[in-house]
Length: 171
Picture 1: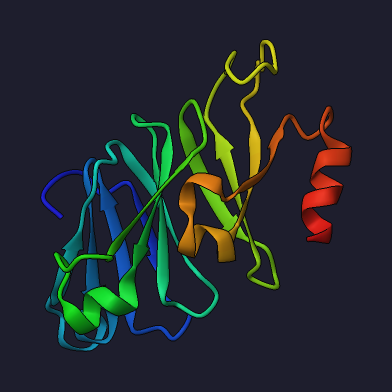
Picture 2: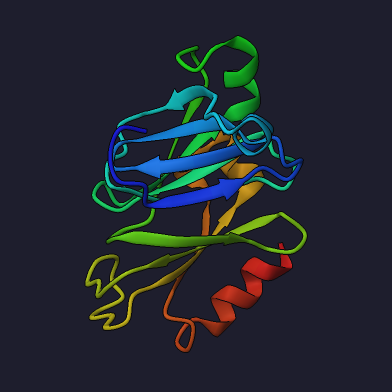
């Protein structure tokens, strides 16, 4: 990464550290960094997303999700393919999940099927009216790996969207 580090995530197997900064995400060999004191950057993931904040690996570690605050998306990368075929290979940047204003924090559900995404601030888009404290959105991980544009399964303020979130959790 060439700018300010904003977020990091460790792969489930402990082999890789994803480091986000403004417009790209570096994938670093964690054992090389920890045990040898040198940063071995395996490659850099980049797409149309800008304003990267956080990163989260899928439960199996093959995919990486990156919140893009400025482009209002979550970018989806096939890390397994990047490590095998090269970081600029076709299909490494799978696509983007549209999530609206300022996506920031992300975490996986315990079973790894859902990705929860929070936004930093108010949003008036999507017919929800004024949302003074940001949004919580739910993304289907399986769908994001194949069709990111259609992967969002719930969106709203938690207090106002309980039924929608319960449905997403039942998927």
